Image (cartoon, rainbow, N blue to C red; front, side, top):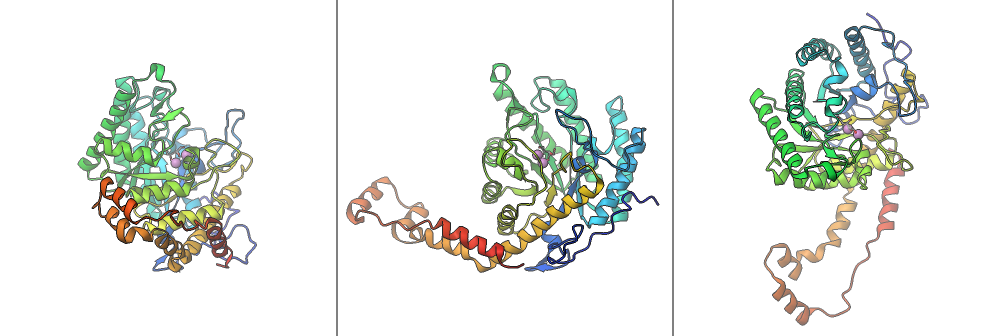
Length: 442
Ligand code: XLS
Ligand code: NI
Ligand code: NI
């Protein structure tokens, strides 16, 4: 059997004293953190598009990425070799899951029928490889943004034939996701939005998006797909304004169209920052709204204003993310998908391994810190105390919806002595405390 990455051996856990770059310092899959193993907490997944299909082009430059299947000309043979190499990669890293778009894994044909046949052939190979390498599918999705037919959008295109084509494409993508035993199915509406309101019927586009998602949920039920349906918010890029701007917009949209029970959110760190939030905010907001389904784990560059999709290495960020995820009782059936790509200057296969190792270790480290923080209960205790006035007297009445403005006015006149005494927010003290948890050896 061909070995595609002979220079890389199986990546092992060596502990945090090791300086061997291609080893895990923190991720020890079987090690228990609380009552679950690290691999059960983290459910890491590789993103097929960035890691195996992307070529490292940018608006100014050609492909730079070097991969063992580069020289193969025939598109189907190339797709097969790429798949075999991808599964070797996952096995060597001990990754349990992967995610894909329909068009990442198989080349398009001249008609939808031919395209679907190509997809089916590759999916059969995936079935074999998944069994052989013990890897599962976290989620599948359809690429509804690359082909020129989607220039004006897919479900929100002004052209009804494009809507129909997108529906047919999603139908097939859901069916192959089911065939591969996918735990989730994702909708990311990169072109579901607008560039200018001068040419856009906002009301019809939003209604059509809801119609599309309703049909998709119905289809999932009809074919017996039991996975979780996820929508991935992103405020912009490629479209100027995208309808699933952030979790809050998504929550309002789902409730407006009665879809809140069928869908959850797939939250991407770099999309949160593009929306002017931090990752922590989006996770917390989703958790509070019972929408936290899965995570696209990456990070942006604070100096650059776009979706740079870098591997997550900021341990402060991964700690806070894992804190929210633990408070959510984990992500399953969702997981942590590395929707991240190596820089185009990091073009060797070794870079792809090193990038995943850095991301995996950053989240494993964050998990361990977050677990201690949660067990000790320091932040939650502080919050309990901060809001304690809502558990007694007038505060209790407010929370039990048992008062009104008239009564509150009388309460102020009769009982409140000014100035009202406030407690300090103690932000810096808490930040120092968080740092002390991060710097305590894991
Ligand atoms: C793009 C998105 C995309 C989705 C899947 O910014 O992150 O990669 O995750 O279509
Ligand atoms: Ni993503
Ligand atoms: Ni993204």
